[in-house]
Image (tube, rainbow, N blue to C red; front, top):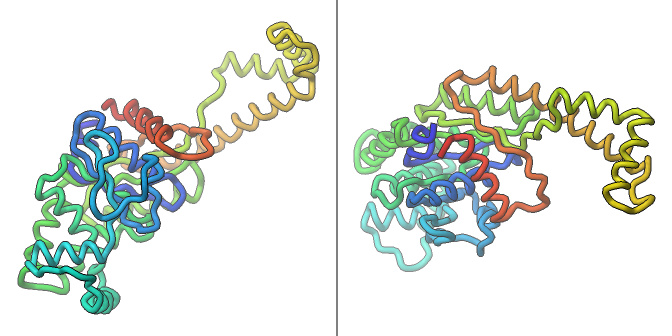
Length: 327
């Protein structure tokens, strides 16, 4: 599976808002970089918080190294347009491109795919020029990513000849090659994220020619008990069991009254709630697995129980993904 996922050159990571796609983007990029691959991870939302996952200063359009083999950038439409005009059309731009940008906004609002093509074109350009071994895109959420990935086709419907038409051709060559490009859909084991994930997977297959590389189920609660442990747990739920638990803790702790029956009962209630939540979410994971093609890799990332996501959480998620893909 490692060959199928991280040996690609371009990965778009998407999902319903709030499921952790930025965390997974950062972790995939970090994992690839740790294994010596020259990696770029870029966010396409100027309001994104990718920098937080590496505990670094806010990122800009110029890639910035945050660890060996790993650079981070924020992709904006205006900066992408500026670079496109400079590199592809040889138009030197010194000051802000104000009037041109306003004209571009007019065209972009009138024609589908014009704004998205700058995003797709920029990351595909980095692959074509072999600036990196892997480009990971913290892409738009599931409601918009299909339009983004289908931008070259949309432009081809508008432009039949010329330089722009030629450039959408090489973009499509990269995007439509499953050995080079793939989509990673992130979800959580909850009803709506799973429903949206299955809908997105269906749309990707019907409306784009970009391959689905994997689905990541994020924040999966661990199973607390095996069968024998669960039998012991049920025994502890009795008055006699709670009394024995309090006595056992007192023997270990050496302090009287540190844990009483109320505290022990609350701890057991919390454990039972965790088990119930885990099993309820297991049903959603079953729905997810059954809704995906059997050949689609489904990767699991455990719930981290962390209040904030920084570099430590990114490393933990990268480690979990490494275990899942054997990389």
